[in-house]
Amino acid sequence: MTEPEGQRLGKAEFIALMAMMFATIAFSIDAMLPALPAIANDIAPEGGVAQAALVMTFFVIGMGAGTFFTGPLSDAIGRKPVVYLGLAVYALGAVLSWVAPTLELMLAARVLQGLGAAGPRVVSAAIIRDLYAGRAMASILSLTMMVFLLVPAIAPLMGKIIMDAAGWRAIFPAFLIFALIILLWFATRISETLPRENRRPLRWPLMVDAVGQMFANRTVRLSIYVQTLMLMILFSILTMVQPIFEVSFDRAETFPIWFGAIALASGVSSLLNAAIVGRFGMRRMVTWALSAQLVISTIFVMWMIADMPGLFWFYIFWQWGVMFQGGLTVANLNAIAMEPMGHIAGMAASVIGAISTVLGAALASPIGLMFDGTPMALVATVLIACIVASILMQQMRRAEEAVA
Image (tube, rainbow, N blue to C red):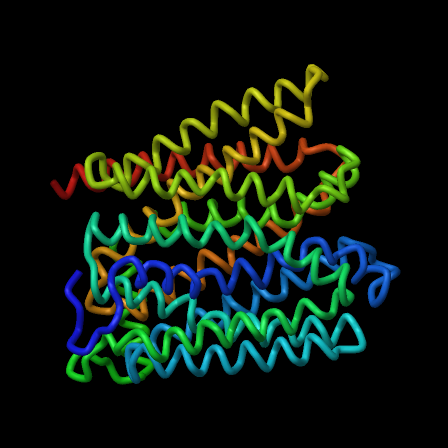
């Protein structure tokens, strides 16, 4: 790793800090999962859990919208000021969510919180690109993802503990504490990674040109499409996992423990990816992961159609497989898209994040309405998404061969 002058942290601490900045998103979403029934009872009694789940969807919408602006802003004024601004907006959104008397006001506050969360999320990817390139960047992103997966492993359980002790609204002060920890750590331990001479003025024509450069590159374009499908899968899991445990399997009380165990076990995939991506390459890792998921999801659909026994345990294995797949795909796809865009890393991180996140959330939103008391709709959605993604990855392979 080539460190800028004055850099104060080593590689391990750098990975941990970047992971925590990534994890702002996961913590802000996953900690709310156990609180959905309580939120529905208190401020969304007519819409139920499905309407209460909008507190996650609106956060993602705000984050996706903010993602588009934070990258170019960090290219213009530097990485650190944008992180500070983002954390301030995030904290304001958390406070307003904490005191919101109605669901409508809470959703507006959650959009604001999501806008702020985009700062550390996007800038962390840009900082990694500032310091790394190629398969080394993919390896660092994988290790970052491994640490990042620890947060969704414990966030639902943390949310439940906080909710049981002080009510569901007490989760929002926890978000404030989390933001403060990141702020102090980031401010004191990392130096600015974008020198003044490499900054790009914040001008609309330059932004349009940067987006044009990205979409003119077929590999980058295809990578964004596949990443969108992978995020759609993850958002669909988040939307439906609590109802599946509660309604399909009558395990609402133990849901945070199951979810945490699955997320923790799936973190092995990021460690595996970091260890072998340098040997096999990013595209192959994504393709292999998608192929494995195609087989598993196909078998699971047939298992449910045949009404075979052991459905709960197959579901646990299947969900672990989906989250394991995430560790082998998202970081690699992001690295594939970022690799040719080092000269506009901030803008590239913004466009990739904004498009894949907003479209992924939009595609996942209707999936929850398809819930019929079984995991079928979710599993079928994952199967279809993997089929489409596999086709796109084959097109990417042909594009790379044509260039070679």
